Image (tube, rainbow, N blue to C red; front, side, top):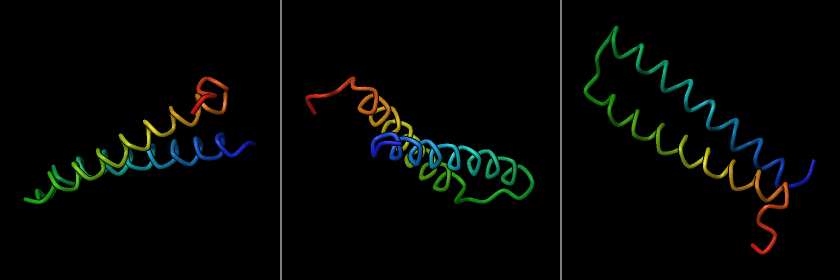
Length: 69
């Protein structure tokens, strides 16, 4: 496994974990609403989205799609 493949796998894992925590937080909000839920969802969405984007970038680099960068 190359360095870019490893980075893509880690970024994918982080994105999946953020998605799972986001779903869990949504369910928990229905049982015990919190005024700070929007902050948690925003942070999880931002980290998960950035991780998903980085996974795409590293996956393309690993396959040779962006050799010049």
